View (tube, helix red, strand yellow):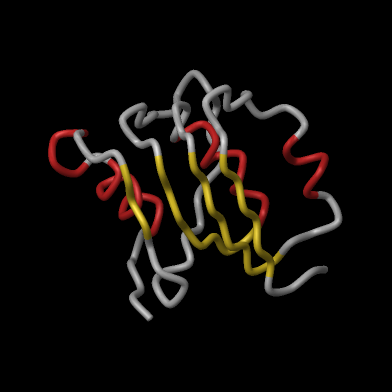
Length: 111
């Protein structure tokens, strides 16, 4: 299990790797659980080059941040370690992912 001091920066560095030319990024289910911080849409950096992403998140509260990070995503597979009963409300105001065609959400634990 790989651990980073700042998982938000680590994820952003990977998404921006190769001069923002990557189209597909996949972290296996044994890799880092990313804990993203909430951001204002105006301040958020996005990676429109990313079309496919497989990632593991610590909580569902950061799923909205992923939607902002990858606006042109076509395939998004997410595993969330802690899925709360508030998750629907969390996602109500996130931007639409108009290119998304394949979405999977897995949760190991519900609260």
